[in-house]
Length: 296
Image 1: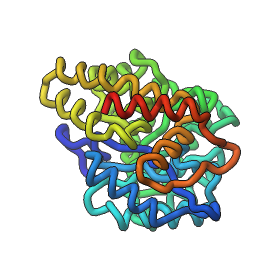
Image 2 (image 1 turned 180 degrees about the vertical axis):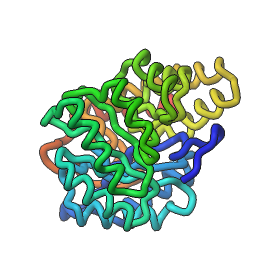
Image 3 (image 1 turned 180 degrees about the horizontal axis):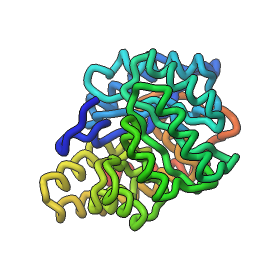
Image 4 (image 1 turned 135 degrees about the vertical axis):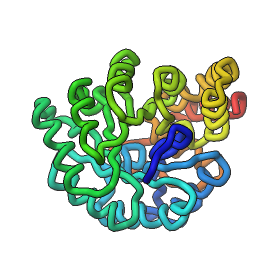
């Protein structure tokens, strides 16, 4: 994929899409295609991330990942970038998933920091480089220390940017100064990995968002992005203020659980989360649905 200042490598508005399940617990490919089409055609998206954590990737098999990715590519791949989550805490397995994603026709890869095992910095860099060397697809690194257990250090990100296929970062570190340093000293394209982090990140050179609440707020987030890119900062701030209750409300409990529960009340049939995720407390769901009604 090619990038330009007007169109970053994976687009500007992406959602880490949930994975629908049917009553039998199997992946509901029909509903996955329907949701992907809705996000792209009705919610202003120019990209989707499939098989990420929000997509419950720790609970889906490699075959389920392959089928889901292929379904979404067939549904929207002609008009949106489709990025495949392939990160695991096993380098060899991550490489296998990256090759599977390339064979399916993905536009890029999302590679998260190996979680729980907390590799030292040199081993962490070697992990990312091994995946990049094994694939021809551009890579978005996922920096989420509060889940992975460790951050990707600034110096590592700057060094990794020298690899021709390490192109972007999904930034859920929540450290705007650190993000600023990397953006200023590398060619990496930065995407907010926390919805509320979008406007601050744009201000220091970020490109867009890989969102969660954007399952519902895509048009409004698109308006925020368009206003910022056009130089209308006051309008962008107004959109951001309107969206903050949505950005925060989706995480009143675990984000995937909230998105699925709300989608099931908004005309979709995406099923429940697989264990160990559970059900959203009714009062939390009603509160979030009220926020959506009031703010969107």
